[in-house]
Image (cartoon, rainbow, N blue to C red):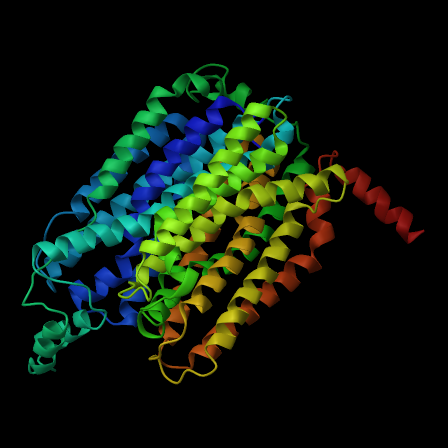
Length: 551
C-alpha cells in the first residue's frame, strides 16, 4: 500500500491534511452558527451554506486556469495566504444579528473560497504529476486513495476541535450546549417569545444569560502547519515544478503525458464533461452531511448513545480503531518477524485502549451535539482505505478491476442504498421532531463512505490521468466546478426540509442517485473507449469504420 510511492506524495498529502482540518473545523458548525448568531431558519441558512460550498468548489476552475498560465506551486502558496486572511476575518468578534456582521462574514467566506480555488485543485495536479514517471505510473490510483485518506485524517479531528472550541467559549460565559436554546433566544429577540421559555430552558441546563462566541481561529493555525510542511518538503517534489513563463516550460508540460491527436483530445474532454455531469448529483446528496443530515441529527435523533455505539463519539477511540486496522494489514503483509511482532503489540494496545474507552465512557452518553456525527465519515475513509486498496489490487491482478467511470456508477448505487437506510429510519417520523437511534445516521455515513471511496479519489485520479496535458489544471478545475454545482444543489433538500416528510425527502435523494447511475451506465462503452490508453481513432478512421458498417 505504501510501497513504491514517491516521497513527494506524503509531503503534499500532509500539507493538504492541515488545510482540510481547518476547513472542516469551521464547516462542522457553520450551519448551526448561522442559525444561532443571525437567527436564520433552515431555508436561508441552507442557502448560504450551499452557496459557500458551491463557491469553494467552483473557484478551482479559475485557479486551474491561472495555474496553467502561471505556476501550480505559486498558486498553492498564494492560496494558503488568502485562506489565512479569510479565517482571520471570520474569527473577528462581531455583533449578533447585524447587517455589518453578515457583510464581514460574507467577505471572509469569499476570501476562503478564493484561497481554496488556488490551493486545492492545483495541489492535486501536482500529486498527479508525480506519477508521470514510468516507475510510478501503476501506483496512481493507490496514491490518490492514500492522498484522500490523509485529507480525512484532518477531517476526522475537525468536529472534535469545533465542539471543543464551542464548549470552551461557552464555559467561559457560564453556558452549556442546548440544541433548542439558539432558536428560543432568536424568537425572544424578535419579540415572538416573552422570555419565560428562555429562562426555563436556561435554568434547566444550569445557565444564566450569555454572550457571543467565535470558534474559527483554529483554522489559521492549521494553515501555518500546512505551509511549513509544503515549504520544508519542497525537495521531494521539486522535479515536477515548472514556471510557465520560462523558456521550454510549455514543452515540458506538453511532454508530461501521452501525445494526443486532436480527435483523442476532443473525445477525452467530452468524456470528462459527461462524468462531471454525474458527479454533480453525487455531491448534491453526499454533502447533505452538513445540511439535512445535520438538521436530522439536531431535531430527529436522540442525543444519547449506549453500548459500544457511545465510544464512536470519542475521536480517540475512532483513531485507535484506525491504527488497529493498519497494524492488522501490516501483520499480514509484512515479511519481517520484527515488523509482525510490532504489529501484534499495537493490536494488543488498541484492544486495551478500546476496553478503556468503553469502561470510562458514561452509559448512556448524553449531550451529543449534531456536528459530532460528522467525524464518522472521515473515520470510515481512513479505516476503510486499506480494504479498498487491497480489494481493487486483487481485482487488478485478476485483470478484472472496473474502470473509473464504472466505479463512479457503482458509487451512485451505493449512495442510493445509504439514503434508503435513512428512508427506512424515518418512516415512523411525523414532522421534523423525533428521537430515533443514532445508529441510523452512523450506518448511513458508513454506506455513504463506501460510495465516496468508489467515486471521489478514483474520480480525481481519473481526471489527472485522462485530462489532455495542456488542460490538466482546467480539467481538474472542471471536476471541482461540477462539485460546486452539486454543492449548490445541496440547498434544494434544505428548501424541502419541514415541508414534506423526512422519509419522502430521503426517497427523492434515492431516486436522484439511481437515475444518475442509470445515465452513466448507459454511456459506459463510450466513456471507456474515449479514455482508454490505446490511441484514439482519427477522423479518417472513424469515417472508414462507418463506411465498412454501411457495406
